[in-house]
Amino acid sequence: MTMRMGRIPFLLVLCCITALLWLACAKLAVPPLIESVYRGESLPVFNALIKGQSQFPVSHYLQKWDRITIEIVIGLVGFWLLVIVTTSPFYFRRFVGEATPGTLGAIRMWTCAILLLSTLWDDLSSIALLPLELREPMGLMKILDELPIGYQQFLTSAVSLRLFQWLTELLLFLGVIGWRTRAVIPLGAICVFVLNGVLREYSGFWHQNLVPIYVLAVLSFTPCGEGWSLDRLLKVYQGHPVPDSERTSAVYGWARYACWVPIVLTYAAGGLTKLRADGLFWVSPTSMRSHLYEQTLYPRAGNWSISLYLAPAPDIVFILLGTIALCGELFFVTVLFSRTARRIFPAVQILMHIGIVFLQNIVFFDLMLLLLIFYDFRSARKAIGRWLGTGGPLQVLYDGYCPSCRRTIRLLASLDLFRRLLPVLGHESSSPRERARSAPGGNCLCLRPDGRVPNLSPLSRELRRRTGPHRHARGGRVSVGTSAPI
Image (tube, rainbow, N blue to C red; front, side, top):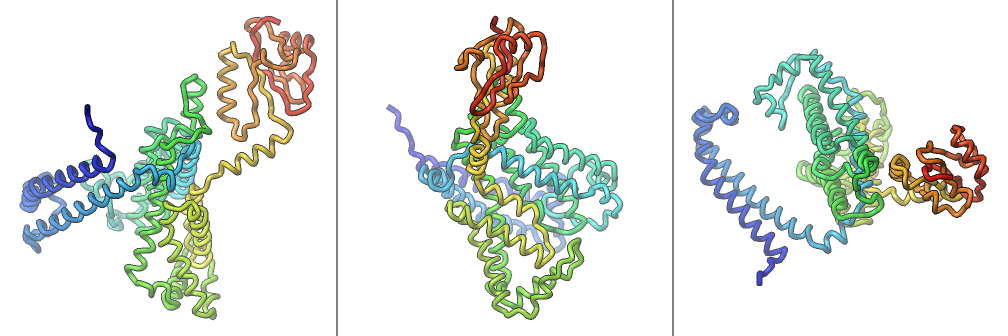
């Protein structure tokens, strides 16, 4: 009889194995590579990483690597401890919760739409007019300079830049409609990352669009194409199985939670950075006045100068503004652990960003929209559906023996956002007149709610002559195709 290892012991074993493998690699394989790179005897990509041979001995780089090794070991241990906590059933029930495929699909649509709007706003081809000397390579964009792909020639070609922007916009649009999401979403994330990186290399670092890119990168590893997507409609039309749109699942719950994490980490990092740089002095009247006046006087597209009119205001006003902003960022992490905080802090941050627009002329349009993914709009959709359905559902009569009719019904059910349609098999209809069928191979027949027949083919006229116009007390009836003899 085999004994089954528990979840916690199994994860602890994985923690030890990964830490030991890392230590073995960091202590046995990397130091000789560093020495080889220091002497310029390794691959060109690696040799370019060390350029201070004239200033520092090789031991300096080995010591730096030892510090990195220890930091990564600590990070691995912390990661596995986090995995032990977050993978518990209690954590999932209490903080994560299940979600529907439509919820994840809506996050994909919303994120791609935000990035598409901002991409359409930019003109990447104008970068070709600027000299390469104005570039300031930063972050992961430095890798493109080292690869033999002609990156600098790409930056000086207006045609190439324009085509790349069009490709990025196309991928983001396909992400919105949900076509081939398994390939489109990762490719879109890479392209929009490079596009924004190029813009920052010439204009300096700025925050807009970074967080949506992080969320799109997370969506690349999730089944975000199983809801609100053209992929789903194609599967429905072809008769392939698809997840129930109203059934919640842990897979979609974890995927939604993973999309929240980069947003939370960004706000938490922003608050902690302020504390690390200035401490509590950041919320002081002197600091807040300096931030507001400085940003207001920068030349920008907007011309709001409300901050200047606050100059006579007492210091307590600026202390409150700074405290609200700092606490909103620091405590935003609680949305991962509290459903109540999930309803409050996203709205607080949206209001904060609106205030930043007027007080500092800085527009975080992407964040204001992206924060809406923390809210569940299913209750609002159901309320609208109930309001629209006060007159009863719209009955759709169809022939279950007709493949075209079955495909039509499947598509209509998938597109019925407010659950207004009630599919009814023609032979199950309660009315004797509605049990009438057309001749074999007959055309599809649609009856409007008012009983009028839009397609008066000979078959339609014969069917109407025998059944008469439909009467309805509640809701309309639509008949889609029949094939049995009358």
